[in-house]
Amino acid sequence: MKRQAVTPRESPHHPRLPMPFNDSERAANLVELKGFLQRRRPPEDIRPKLDIGYAVVRQTVDLFEIRPDWRDKSTTRHTPVARIRYLRSRAHWRLYWMRRDLKWHSYEPSPEHASLQEALAVVDEDARCCFFG
Image (cartoon, rainbow, N blue to C red; front, top):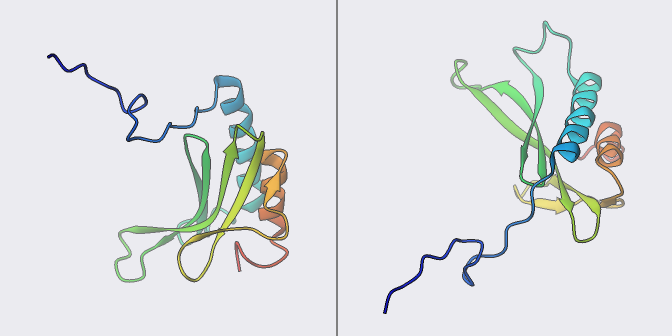
């Protein structure tokens, strides 16, 4: 009997991967992220020592600080600041922060947001000093 190749998406042993953003959603998200960076980034002369960046992987946005490694100044270190994940099934964004245990925890008192812009505003305000200290 011939075995048929099964892609990971169809395999019962692999969870179904979330649908990535379509082109218009991706473009809108990038506009929001670039606006956030314009507000939060330090002046240009400080950026070699401290900067902020982001990465978008599938439906998750990770925000992080960029600094030179304190032991080896020729390398940089990315320190997580916030994670914002879009839950397509519920049509909202979920906000997380990294605690001392180095695990992502739902941000209380407002873990769910209707838009990426709302979630980024909470990170920008940082009322409880969970993101930028």
